[in-house]
Image 1: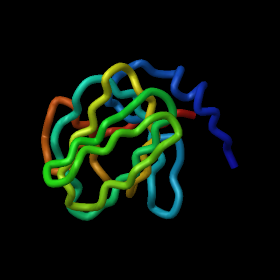
Image 2 (image 1 turned 135 degrees about the vertical axis):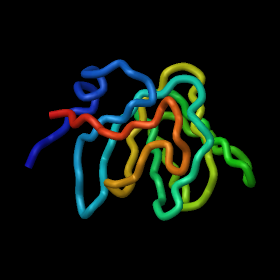
Image 3 (image 1 turned 30 degrees about the vertical axis):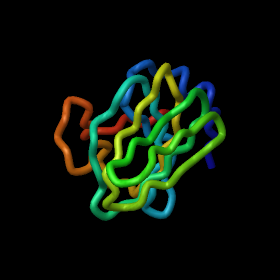
Length: 121
């Protein structure tokens, strides 16, 4: 079993909106990402997505519901099929939990789409 020090893992990269894989369990991926500014509007047809804010603040904008404001230590699960856009005013460090095959931009092809997620060892 490997342990992950979140502070060390986040310190190992600087790219925004470029998730890094830190663990897998039962077909699910645990990813870390740094976020600043706006991500793309998207949804995941068949996957729920958990956002946990490790540091900073993150807003999850939703088309059909009130936006969700998250601060350090808070999480939200965005259900499958719900269109959303993460936004960070200032840098936020976030942990994502979702099925391993889930593409970061869901149904959208965008500049921020990651097809090969780097693993932090």
